[in-house]
Length: 358
Image (cartoon, rainbow, N blue to C red):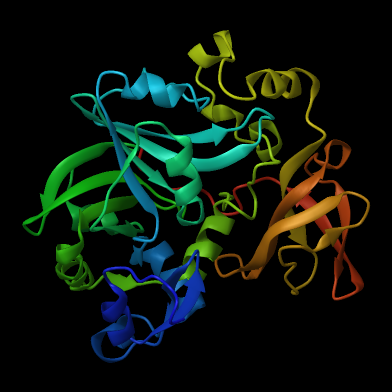
């Protein structure tokens, strides 16, 4: 832990009873042991933090992720050459989820891109891929001394008070603190991502948890929430050998981009769309109560890439990659868990319906 980087909220987390773990080179809270007023709202722990997010609101520190800008008249064109998304068509005040692809059609990273107007793009990339992405994207400028908070849950909108539609972005202020705010939600809930100067992050976090509906939540709840929502985690469900077709992410390919397929690996991605990919990401429901974790073999078919216990469903859930002939909903599978066969079934995702603002 002594060799790990820290976020601007490190001391704040520890003061709230956070259990810190290594993640992507950072010391990050995995869950909390609350005391005082927070303990009256939520007992803490992954299960309680998860359910609190689903019913009210949870505050996540995601400052480990990479924030960066691209500026100038050619910024959108330069980025569009590297991704399948329509960046030139992205309007000011809007953001888009997209993918960096390689010449084999594999996914270098998944990222968010926002148009701030005046030829300014704002990017958020995965913590584990920051160095790779920043070296890969010409003209990108990493942002230092910023924190990134995510307030997620049905109560988030009333607390943040910023009038944004889904996938909107605005430069504004919250509690008198200048912020860059977007509205999406990695939990499947309505949510706001708030980029804030590092020296104001603790004040903003304190203001947010000052609301009765809000508790801090750690990486454990964030992972179980995104799994229920059927959302990918880079390095687990996505990597440089996985294509957008295999991952079920072909919706990120802009209509205009399908006229030329001139992004890295475009010809391969088009061929898989036309003729089918050899494997596909699917939702999986194990039978019984035992969870099937990442790396669990699917006999004769594939492998689990994310798996665990769903607090919302009170049952194990997973997703992974199977050969195309095993990908249809309702297909019976056999997992190997602790050396024993476990029946499972391919099911639709998300496991829990999305509640994004529309």
